[in-house]
Length: 121
Image (tube, rainbow, N blue to C red; front, side, top):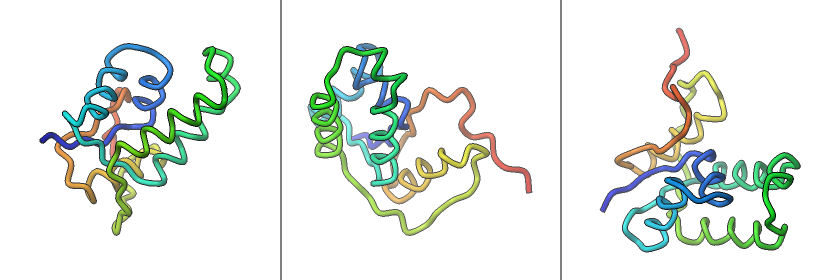
C-alpha cells in the first residue's frame, strides 16, 4: 500500500474544501492510502485550523473542526521521528521531512510550489 506524508496545507484544504485534498483524505479514511504524520504536524494543523482567517472562510463550528482534527489523527499512523532534518529553507517544512523519513513513505504530498529548496551550506 502507498504511504504518504500529507503537508499541513493538504490537511487544511481537505478538511475545509472539496477537491483533490479531500479525495486524498477519503482514500486515507478508506484505507487505500496510509498517511504517516507526527505530533508536530498535527499540532501545526490544529493551530492553522483555528486561525481567524480560516474560520472566517468556512461555516464549520469549532466542535466540527475539532472532530475533523481528531478523525485525521485517528486514521493516520503517527510516528515519533528519531532524526530531525534542517534541509528546507522554510523551517516549518522540515517536520514533514522528519515524519516522511521516519515513516519511510513513498510520497510527500504538498501544495508548496518548491518545497525542496534546500538551504545553502
